[in-house]
Length: 248
Image (cartoon, rainbow, N blue to C red; front, side, top):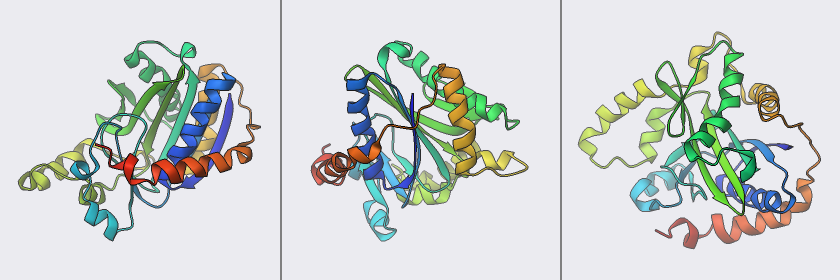
């Protein structure tokens, strides 16, 4: 299994890179595990959502927040520097064919890694991980070209106020109640640790857990530099482009 830690990049670059890696896995039949983060703060919407319905675009522009449509489904998400993000791109025949089972299978290494920190998270169908009944991770998936692409975030800290300043609430009258409710239902893992953990700590911990659980040896020689021109081409022609981001 090829492994990449690409650090913190824009949402448009991250999703272009995932798409290029999806094509690479489809050809080479070798799984790729990538760890990364988002900088600057970004809002992303699921493939079938409408940007103007989900995001306060004026507020996003004011705060220089990039807004991008994902290749995967799911709901609108805010990404900031206090999140750890992974992508696993893997041939379909290496994961359960059932969607729910595949989510749980791919999330398992995250749970095992957090167990080693003394935490006791659980998988919560369809695609979340919870800790003490609070959400710490959301995940999304797509299946294309004989591959599964699953990515997800693990919250180190949760800035619910910032999130709701960017994501639209259908009825402004219930905004305050909804924010208070989400604050009770969403948490960051550092709120539950005596010694806070950072992005690099999770890279070291979870790369080993994915390799052990999937029974695949980590390899570091993908040669991503040779793919950079293609990544930038897709970033600029698709994920930075109005036609893609506002297609619905």
